[in-house]
Image 1 (cartoon, rainbow, N blue to C red):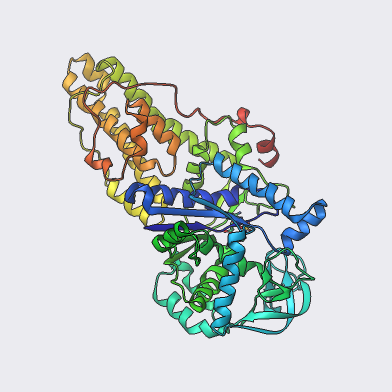
Image 2: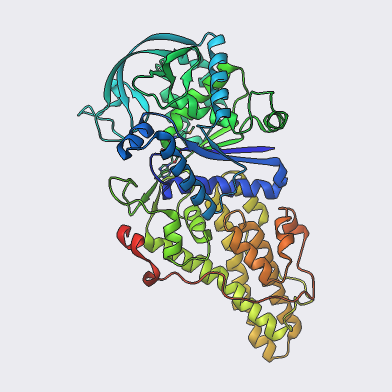
Length: 521
Ligand code: MSP
């Protein structure tokens, strides 16, 4: 059983490439685990974070009710994820009634554990971060360093969570297990535990009305992060025995195996969240993986900088048949975990070099030669060995270790090796010499490599992979039923007719790019 989650996005604005990056990475893992374990053993949750001061303000500025605003933006997120082929099992919205019930139950449990108390809070609040800041967190000008804006000074009577109670248990969890991934981020998180203070977990209703009410205290609303983090429980139907189906899903999948989050929200996921779960008596997630940030032409992606490019626009403006090139590029552009920079030039270069040239050419010339020398059928011959150390086992190990970039490199090494066999053996010359047996071996090598590579790459490029599969003459319905073990256990049926078609990916061209791309590029 594998339960994967992404962070749930704030609905103050539409999704951009940064949000897409995280969802794509998690989708790649979900698709990989479905291949390995079978689809019924994987649960992939994503969704939207719809409460809090930031969203309330955005709706106010638009002159509409928060509900109307969040409904519209949540739809925009869903549409974008559909375009990007994000295969989530459930899309959770924190404004769902089931989530209200869950959050109230979490609150009750934490209160029963003696971890919730009322006290007065004096300090700063950054609405951009939706978090309380201490004087230590501010820069020299007294601004929030992330948002470069002054936080609001607040003095409020709030409910607090006894986070300090969990300091030692958290230290053990973080220092002695691989709860925090990548491992090199562990120290940064351990430092956050130094002088751990209790946290304010509610705000007066008069300040923030667009939030879940504190049970039995109508003057207070639950702090947006307590609400947001609990989505991972609601998402699998958690903590309620009213609904048998929901309960079954919870029992099968709780707790999360990998929680994918951006590096900016590690504190919430690696400290607040496990402490909340400990307090409520629930099992902890296995791993929280903090990925890096994507910049656009080396600039932070932000509405105020005007460089927000909608992922769907990028696809239409390049005239792409689907999201695979974007998915591929984002997974390849940087070692996963580190920050990465998106540029249009490197996007085009990457797609043209790897997919159109390398993989696309292997497919096209192989099928052309199969048509020419083998009557368009998979020839009866054994494939030759590939000259590479990178095989299916390495690819699997890289996906499992959450290294999609390395999985891709290993797959490309196989494509290179198959292209190398063609360059070395020159089947067209062999054919001229009448050595048709050798021609058959070379082409069988490419065909089997293509079959294998199509499956290995399918978590990243599901549509391209399916296209290759079909051009190899295989049944499209069988593609969905494939498992990872079929890569090496199966092969193309000898004599199967190939179905050469249009190139699956056109080369990307500057000229094709439209307004949004030009504006940002
Ligand atoms: N709502 C909170 C998360 C609550 S999870 C219980 C939030 N929302 S967000 O919309 O600001 O960010 C959602 C996710 O997108 C976060 O993991 C964040 O790190 C990620 N990213 C936002 N911009 C990003 C980039 N430019 N690059 C990569 N990821 C980025 O935080």
